[in-house]
Image 1 (cartoon, rainbow, N blue to C red):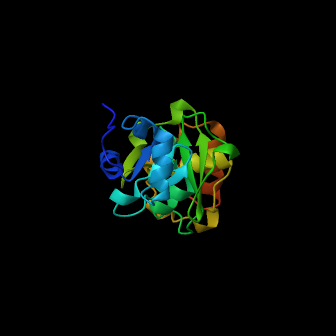
Image 2 (image 1 turned 60 degrees about the vertical axis):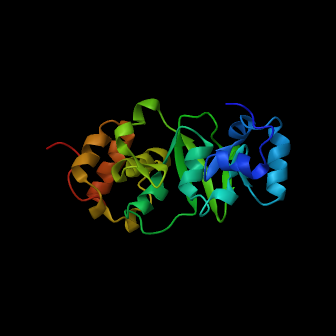
Length: 207
């Protein structure tokens, strides 16, 4: 793509993705992306979300959702654990931390993103547990299925999160049983304990 040396700032922004774009996207259109981004931000046309990630304010109908920011900032990523459980109605308590699962090496405290009143945290998972068939598109963001979100949470937290507040009727117990067999035995053991405590209804182990 040719760089638009003669394009106005607004014309360049119109060519950039919405609602989010990266500094790499801008560098394809302008000779000096750092200066362009600085000036566009001063005019209020864009807003920096995190390192190299920007919100195209002028051409967006509404701010990007937390899930969109999380998936865009680290690729590939998908939303899981308590945040996805809340989206699916498994967990009624709305979390303030959005957990995104990624294969990207950028995880840990240094890579936390603050967005509005929420925090986005990234956790890495074994590639064999990525399970593309259990990741769905939801309003432009990749989100784990209810059962995978639940299992990811047990896998990463080493416990059944918010056990007393779960709406387990929104889980497909047959799928949960099938998917749990792909996770380490410690995850299956946690689910077994949950079953004994009547937190999870239905068999998780073969008869």
